[in-house]
Length: 70
Image (cartoon, rainbow, N blue to C red):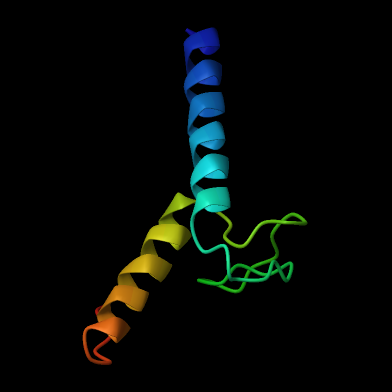
């Protein structure tokens, strides 16, 4: 059971790393999450998929006319 959980966690981390590399290539990695402002490992722009999704949702709202979505 632990092996399956470890494998699922690895796959999730791998998928997140791929998504972060492919999205927002113009953002500069600053050591802080662009969504929640927490410290992130060197080279990363977001701390997790939730922050990435939140950032994208807010960016989409801004592009639609400056309305932020809560």
